[in-house]
Amino acid sequence: MRKKVIAGNWKMYNDIPASVNLISELKKSLSGQEIKADVIICPPFTSLDTAKTLIEGSVIKLGAQNMYFEENGAYTGEISASMLKSAGCEFVILGHSERRTIFLENDQLINKKIKKALSSALKPIFCVGETLQQRESGTTESVIKTQVTEGLSGVSAEDLKKIIIAYEPVWAIGTGKTASPDQAQEVHKFIRTLVEKLYSKEAADEIIIQYGGSVKPENASLLLSQPDVDGALVGGACLKAESFFSIIKAA
Ligand code: 13P
Image 1: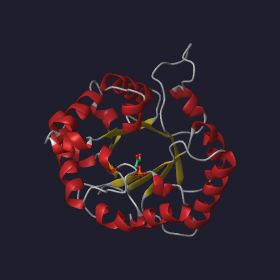
Image 2 (image 1 turned 120 degrees about the horizontal axis):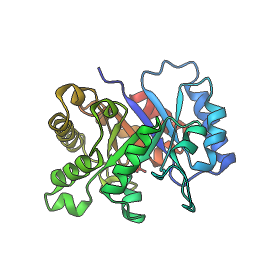
Image 3 (image 1 turned 135 degrees about the vertical axis):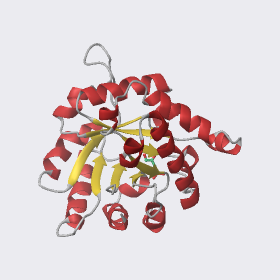
């Protein structure tokens, strides 16, 4: 049985005081509760170190939202895998559609980042997803296939176990338009079958595939009850402890 994984992608929200508030509130909600899902928060870089201290002793795990693939060097503005490790991160989101579209990241760059994260003992939350135009033109599966295949190129079966795939249809991100449970299930199943073809049945059965895109307390239960939806990557709704907690409860 795959354990559900609920991750909160804070994006570019919350300075340090706001991060302290949000984590404190979330810890209050979680304390004394029986939590069956894994819970991950991905604050901005500037709040990671503070978050690391605050989550100690709680069920909350820490992730970052991006990193660069080089070990170190003259890369102004970039953050390395080892820096994230030293800030207490266990996870790192890679290939988010906002990185792909706004910062022009391509599959090759994302693949390098995934491999660097893995060799640095960071677990990638690897995002894939089609745009509205791609969905409407019927190319969803080929787009996802390319993103998954290129992103995982050269990744061993052993390392795959450390990867979470997040299916985030671009048209559902921050728009309030969620994929229907059937639409999500269809693509999740497609990704799992693809992993089976690329690796093995065992690998496909084990891999965690999260859904992301306007996940809210109101739609979380139905999405999470789909057989191939193993969790959620939450944006907007993770910025309030109460709504993030409701989604965790739904899992
Ligand atoms: P929203 O939940 O705000 O749609 O964002 C989803 C997302 O991009 C998570 O990575």
